[in-house]
Image (cartoon, rainbow over all chains, first blue to last red; front, side, top):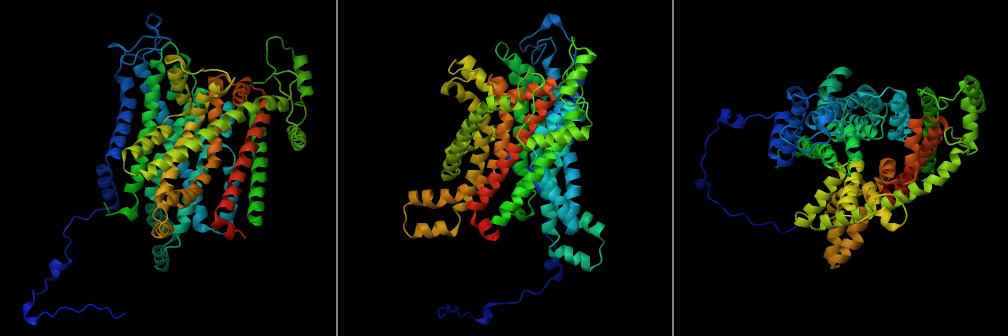
Amino acid sequence: MDNNYELKNIDKSEFRTVGKNAEKMESITRPNLTYWADAWRRIKKNKVAFISLMVIIVYIIMAIFAPMLSKYDYTAVDSSKMNQFISSEHWFGTDELGRDLWVRVWRGARVSLTIGFVATVMNTIVGGLIGGISGYYGGALDTFIMRVIDVMYGIPSLIVQILVMVVLKPGVKALIIAMCITGWIGSARFVRGEVYRLKEQDFVDAAKVLGVSNFTIIVKHLIPNIMGLIITNVTMAVPGAIFSEAFLSYIGLGIAPPECSWGVLTKTGVKMLRVYPYQLFIPAFFICTTMLALNLLGDGLRDALDPKLRGTE
Amino acid sequence: MGKYIIKRLGISLATILVLVTVVFILVRLMPGDPFSSEKMTPEIKANLEKYYGFDKPLIEQYFTYIKNLIKGDLGYSMKYKNQSVNTIIADSFPFSVDLGIRALVFGISFGLVFGIIAALNRGKKLDFICIVIAIIGTSVPDFIMGALLQYFFGIHWGLLPVAQYQGFKYTILPSIAVGFYTLAQVSRLMRASMLEVVQQDYIKTAKSKGISSFRVTYKHQIRNAIMPVVTVLGPTVAAVLTGTFVIESMYAIPGMGKFYVQSVQNYDYSMVLGMTVFYGTFLVLANMVVDILYGFIDPRIRIAGK
């Protein structure tokens, strides 16, 4: 390699010493961002994800307050006002029994969103614990748990859900139980993989050498490191749970009348489709926009919470 | 490779056994019973229970059931008199398979095309359109998609028939309704995979060797990008199956999904048990085939498993 470029000769006198200012050298000129503050900043910059987040927050607020503030009750039947189209009195019209659809849609939102979030969070906690223990301790226990998971993973969750719903009384609790029986497996597999990868890393070794207990390593080092991924996964899994609820209610196994959910509303909507299509369009709109918003938010969170992308724009 | 296949087979067999046991227990826990009706006297009921073997201890019923299963006998329906579960499945399953295959062909072929178009036009209008289609596909549940298609194409515009299954025209709407989710998944994955492959060194090599860009895209990029898409085929089969459950009753197609939902509502024990075992085994085997197939396609697994 003989192609070293010749350096231009600059005379010494052209340089001068500025002097050292130790304080200035070490000082941090910009505010220190924590991981979460940085993630929040990035989510705000991502327009699609931010709008999705707003949509979900608005839906949650409406699901809580709209049924309380309306003068109609979601079960109140009014035979003089059946199948009315959207009007100033009934903002979303009425259904075949004269019940106000505005209240029913938000009541349905309450049920569907509760099931979606509670089932997913429970699945994540149960699956995370099992997967975390399996991945962290390894050995025979890990092999055993992984075999059990391998076997259970093959069982179609839809079939188990249908059978559990038949055995239990229809309702919110039964739906959550039905979803949790098979739902934890996915998060257990994923958390195990992450823990398995992380525990080999140097910072965990360093903590062990310093004599940190297993419990502290898990709580202080492992959980914060996979929290971002877990939150992304929860966001992506909620639409699946909302879909399952709607599906089971649609085939008549989920929520039983007079209680209502988006699945129940879709079912009646499909029945009335030929004559009163708005009765399907309205709940369908809310189911689809919720699933859309959660999917898009999940995409945004995946980028925002990825530590590798930190500081890149 | 042989070791990998044997391991996969073992897991699948264990899964099927667990499935059969769990389903057997759950079905016996079902409230209500299949013989209840107004004309039923206790005597007839006792006779019927004896006929179906319900008077024997549970454990004995379980082993009889397993024995019959190994022989391929799924028992008799309790509501459809004198019909064996096998004949009902044999009559209805072809419809479901037909619908499922049409949906898969539609979903996978269009999904691949959309994914490729999107990746080749990255950042342009066509890419945006394909992404929007994919997002709609993942956000609209199939029963809503089915109902909307039925309303707009069948009722509102009167373009296509909305019920029954008597020729190609009749299969279009239900196939789209069932296959749209697959389309979305495949196109998203294909797009991402194409964009990843394009950065690989072998593409640069191929280009620098002066191969035409069409050939590079076709021979090197698409062929390599398709590989990861194979992994979603397993879950896709399950999604298509879920779709057939509702779409079959919505479009009055006499497939298995329709019978299954009916049997659950009728407390028809042996039908539910038989059909669940059949569905479960079918899905487990489908997943296994996809996994093994993937092992054959991906040289990394092929070599590692030797």
